[in-house]
Length: 217
Ligand SMILES: Nc1nc2c(ncn2[C@@H]2O[C@H](COP(=O)(O)OP(=O)(O)O)[C@@H](O)[C@H]2O)c(=O)[nH]1
Ligand SMILES: [Mg+2]
Image 1 (cartoon, rainbow, N blue to C red):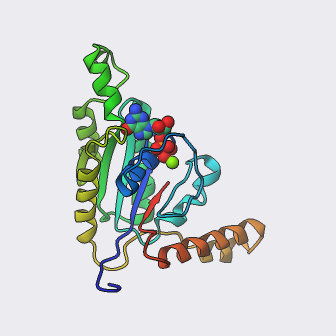
Image 2: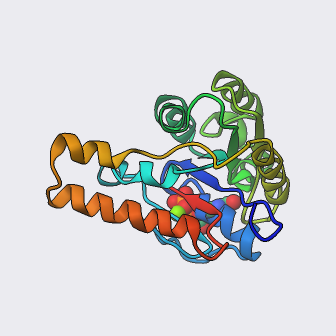
């Protein structure tokens, strides 16, 4: 506890372009970003990243001391839900352990609603609520949410549930990756040094300012 306030760290992961930055931007700043900017590590009130192979090695740093994880996917992209089961949940459990609360979030609900209204939603191409709920149960998620950052539907509710879940986690949170150990085994070459510097930056961000409570990957 610092300054009489609880500090909780929330991390959002999920496929690139599934809607993570927009979700957070709408929640934190009340604004839907007009331009899509894939980001690597953006540190302001949030951090954001583009999940590519190159960033797979740096991403574990951002999980450090998390209290709650949101795994996001896009309701108009079934592949992004599949990646929840084949990639994201494994990474989260490996780096944050079995007990950190995980919420599953389906983004871009407005696109599915629109397709349903025009009769196109039945033809596949969209994830149904039942499918989302089923995967949420399969990965042991605490809850399942659907939202539209564009229309600001379901955004506050999702973060409210995430905050409640985070409050139940005691202490400093879970996650992170012991790069010192890697250095011990692999030597402190250029790559290791770069990763160590990134870790220090991430740790500084964790500690500083009180604004960096949220990380998007
Ligand atoms: N229709 C619709 N588009 C969205 C929504 N959220 C994000 N997008 C769009 O999806 C693209 C990727 O969004 P972004 O938040 O940057 O995804 P990220 O890579 O996961 O951070 C952008 O073109 C956004 O405008 C939404 O709720 N509805
Ligand atoms: Mg982003």
